[in-house]
Image (cartoon, rainbow, N blue to C red; front, side):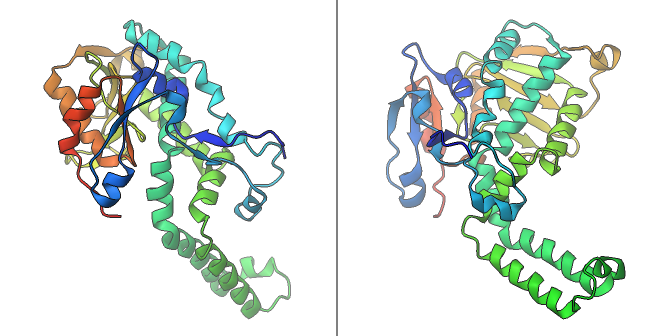
Length: 327
């Protein structure tokens, strides 16, 4: 493994956070940790983009990852460095969108892949969609193995003359090891991201292809879109809000910076893209403050601790809308 030290690792990269800075190169942020846990008064402070949205060794691959099918790691910071693939491209893509220019298909694919990656690499996803399902995920996997041992002669034959009861006991021992792993959510999350040829890679590529074929809109505002530590949300056909939802009749919102929000809707195919698949067109609309306010309000449903903006007053206005979560 590499000995290079990268201690503070960002689950939102600087290339994204820079889009919410003011003329001083900084942004205002609300760290709601104490408010969420204890109901303390939120405090607005000024930060540089590099000083927020990170944790120590959030993506570091350790030797313990071998139990999660991560082997032969040459660089333990490989997942952290994965941001670098679009770190220098993201701003140029947003600049093209800001100029109202259609995107070449390759650029549109990179933009979507980046936004989906930001959702799945996020702390919110790790805590809520993996950490909150540890028992479900572990039991589901090891129940399948147990069923195969008991009912599938071909599966059992692969172990030769080993006593099935011994296999069942081994299966149960390993199940308990995963159930009691305090780092389960981190290890599982990192395994899915690092092993891109497995489910994670298939999901991302599938979503990239799906989101290319439906209409895009760009909402403009006068620097009014709020940033969160888990940007972007989906709405289903019943107007229910989700962190991610792309099954059918969804509307996906993702602020690209403080003045642009990409909106992708699924009611109909994009007829222009059907005609010419080399270019992705989109409509651009300037939104009233009330619409932007509603989008900002909906973004409060799926964040962890942090809200940020180049404008202090925007955060002051949003504080009354924040509901304290029970710890």
